[in-house]
Length: 603
Image (cartoon, one colour):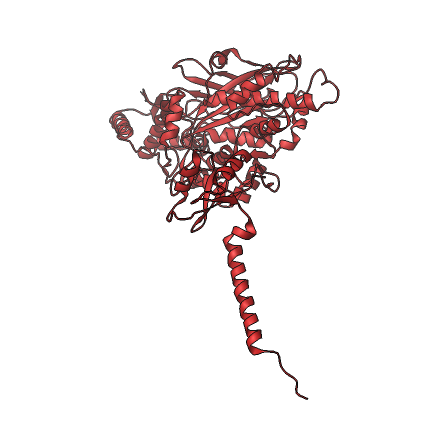
């Protein structure tokens, strides 16, 4: 998915510097700094990253302009945000992509897409999958316009893991096929499990806040290793404080990021005459103080264990998600229906039961959505665009000479030097790389459509606003994979899809056949989705006319499985039942009329 901005005049505004340092620990750091940038600007994201390089810790540095101030003192093992008076332009796109622990759940029943699915049915299917799986990685690519047609790209990878600061332990499912798939492409599950940035949605945050206010919250340390660390620290501090003088200090060393916070909370709760402060990310200073001094320190604005700062730590990546929502820029992705559902469920609110409510919520969060899958599907119909499906294949086609005829204004997209790994080697299904591909496909597709739609030659410096204008018909149309509609309209009613005619199979002489057996019978010839119509009838649905013609040719006069075109008035069980009831009523009426006879008149 992607977040895009409008081009505006140069300006200065308060902004946030966000740096997610993914080293050894689950919480990212947010570092403060100041930059000044000229040229066009607007609320958004831009920045610098170390996105490649062996086993080195990844560092993300994203500058986000927002009209607010959030400060978290350094060393609390938490996210830190600080406002400053610089302005970094967010232009023109910041694509987003996500990877998951699974796609389609098989519990309590399969949620695989079917051509028979209506948007409501598909939503309810995927909803049960989204509730069971989680986001493992989210990729962000910042596209900065260097000159008239050159764009510089910085890509970011965020490994995510559900917040352990919550009141309830989070459960999620791993799909064996998805784990194997991502492992094949080199996904680092150690980073996901050990160093993932936390997140929580609004419902989880509300419960967490209530427990914080009531003082009934404790850190979820369930492993024996965590308990051993805490036990050792408590014993060490208890022995020391018994002989220490007031204002004496000791240093606890070699703690992990989340232990830094947990140790402070445990010690403060257990001992009323100690004060704690973090030193960097792995040490905690413990000082013996009087209860009066302790109260003064707790009421100061510098306390790293204040409720709001703990909450900020627990929210983790959700802080950045909220900034993206407040920016109200066009959100762009590739085949992004499931991505949108995960964004809603993990960072906003649990998915509602109502499909229409989900659409309204997403539209309120992101008023403008563009799915590059919808764009390229349209281009296949209207232009000589090869039939390719994956994002990497679409990118390769748009980069090919056949669609890029030495146009001097064609977008030139270059990766920054610290992201050279993506330039040297393809990394499919790594979120940061796929985000880079998504943004590139958007720019190249929009330029191609602009060139084809312009009566005269394209002006010397096409603006991003022109690119958005030429994509207007695709706005808020998200691709719908194999279903009753071609796309989901997040700003209106979904338009029905025009499939080839459905076929009906009449089973003769082969009793007891089920949907899987019918599917196995036809899969060697072509691909159909199968649904039982009645005891001895099944409907076949395909999205290809040639498959329909093949089956009618070979099975129209089959002795056991004759196939014909489905006619609602003829084959629908409801229509047949209605006709039978109507026939019976008509027959009884006629019989009553005949037996009763017409009344006679005597003279």
